[in-house]
Length: 193
Image (cartoon, rainbow, N blue to C red):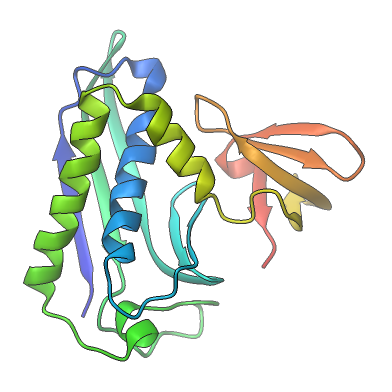
């Protein structure tokens, strides 16, 4: 019903300290693929750190396993999942969606995989060519809830804050309504949707 696969990359051209660029690159490739789908909402977002959203509904996600040797990113295994033809979801999925739910169509998974891989390859080529500023900007432009005051759970305390962006290491940057700046790793903060 869906696309779930792992992608092995060997980005030895990328310094280990810049490995979040790879995350951004792959995320943008998935969004590029989704944007090509006829009938899908233009409200496509990257929910930090690893989810893809249509409006306020999750349509997919990704996970990374990077191998670093010295200062070099030796290889990366990117696990990617996109909901394609599934229309019925378990109750434990609070806000799921799929291409079929969004467009009312059914899809050939092999064709969709080929299209997705082409989009990923285009973004990966841009990363190899050093288009880092554009990758960073495109990612920020698609960051879910960026610039909007929203509720988050930070160290088990509910806060109101605005997402400002991400730093070069992939940490989420927020400004609380109290005026305090936060720089958060994955396990430190949760969206309250």
